[in-house]
Length: 285
Image (tube, rainbow, N blue to C red):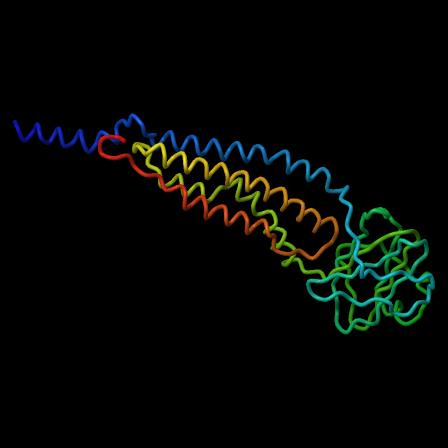
């Protein structure tokens, strides 16, 4: 009988912390509160995403001090070069109408992404067109060529030239077309928003918490504060990343890895270090 009594005492002392803790918090409740923080942060980010999307068409693109000024001579010789990998060239026709641009012959087939930009002094609808052919080379009359609308995919074959005419003030940007580079870098720019939605690091935190176990309130408060701080960092990072991504798309800029992704990664490290909940002791404290 005495042994049974001792076993009961032992069980109560060492298991009561998993039944009830006067100053601790149950794993189930801890998970609930952490999930609520994440859900709230994600809901707050949605208006930002919608707002950025709706204002995408009104983005005013910055101009480049190295932009190529248009010539008012329709038989102008080559006055700009094809952009290299990861770079771009800007054609500046802001000074008037009927301005002309031309490259020398391409040494190999080139695929370009071209876009008429909205700047402080020009519109997306500016009347600028191009011709990519052998006839566009030399000092041929550009105004006499068949001209096409600027597009996101322009092929210039080896031995051919690219000629551009702006019938009214406009500003153009050409970059070497690289779908994989644009896709990967833009995805990286948007990654903080995706991470905020999916919360992989938060999922790891939750998976380490046992529903029927009690944890100290102090360790939980520390974790909760960390999750809240991380959510604020993510909201800031999301806004910055969306701005970068929309500028890349609207202004035809070569995409680059986003600094905000690094900020987001740092916040995950902080959260991971500060979200190791401590179980209550054997008497529930």
